[in-house]
Length: 86
Image (cartoon, rainbow, N blue to C red):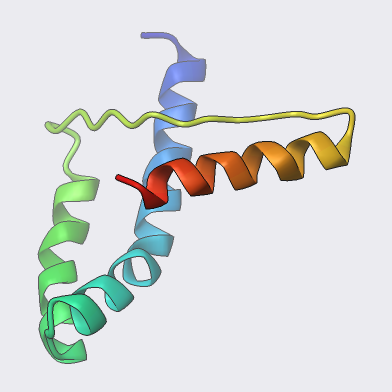
């Protein structure tokens, strides 16, 4: 593993840590019926797991660059439509 991979891992760790509550709160409170306090208590443990370097977390990311903005809008609408059916 080179230094670029390690830096990318550190950035992903920061991204996950900073967005954790935002990623989780709506799902756990609105869909699963948890209280905000219950979610925050869970996220304390999740934060510890994110910072644990013994775990190697992999995630799939899609990055798109489009020269034509209208093409990007069409593509994102198709992706949204596809996942609504799942």
